[in-house]
Length: 273
Image (cartoon, rainbow, N blue to C red; front, side, top):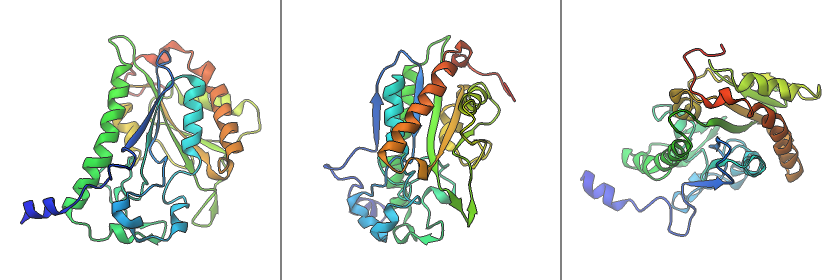
């Protein structure tokens, strides 16, 4: 019966639909990889919009608003590699451990996701096999391609966050998330604050020490790579002008920081904490 059930399930992604990820190689001389897990609100056609009304797919529960274009522009400006997820976090959240209930949420920010309720194990396995695993395997390959015996890449995970959550304002313009390795985070925050006009959150509105940030934990911290999460408030990058402005702002802040050769060496435990 189990075999018959597996055979009855068609492929999740149609032949005419995008692959699980988009990779941009704007240059490899700069050893930097940008990951944008929640770049897209797309739902595979086979899942029928997960039973949601269209308005929810424009909302923050489906994707990180503005993050994809910031990542693409920043990648080309810095001449590096970027990896973007091609499907909505409501299908499978690429930035979660697979044993986390929010990896394929039945409810997100109070909204019921009908297509995720009472899924069979075979359906869960299909999302993992067609979306989650290919994305993370490809990201690992890009990191390894920039790794040598004495030099490793730097990694940035790019996201955006809602201006309010549970009725409370989130006043930061941008947040920099980090755990024990401060080599990238602290100078980046200093550069962003140098104008005096940007409200920069240190591990706000989320913390880099929280176990939910799977991508950085798995691909960067586990290998001793200098890394940071960057979260931009969504109302600041909701249109093309804001996206271009923030890509430029981040590029100008990062360029002098990335000149530090120490960033391209593996960290020792607790470095910079």
